[in-house]
Amino acid sequence: MQTECVKHIAQHLVDELPEKATWDDLMEKIYVRQAIEAGLKDSEAGRTVDVREVRKRLGLSE
Image 1 (spheres, rainbow, N blue to C red):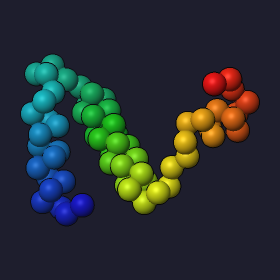
Image 2: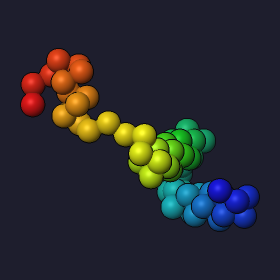
Image 3: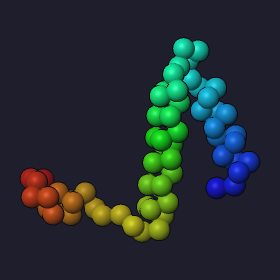
């Protein structure tokens, strides 16, 4: 992601926060955004496992 794009996204995240937000609130928003983007990249690159396969590997019922 280009720096300019990150700056705009970060500004948007800050603008969405309530006035009494804490640093922890901001860090959570950033972390969630980063995790979602990483997941989307993994999905686009085919680095995913079907939920049925995960459940099978973990011995969970379907």
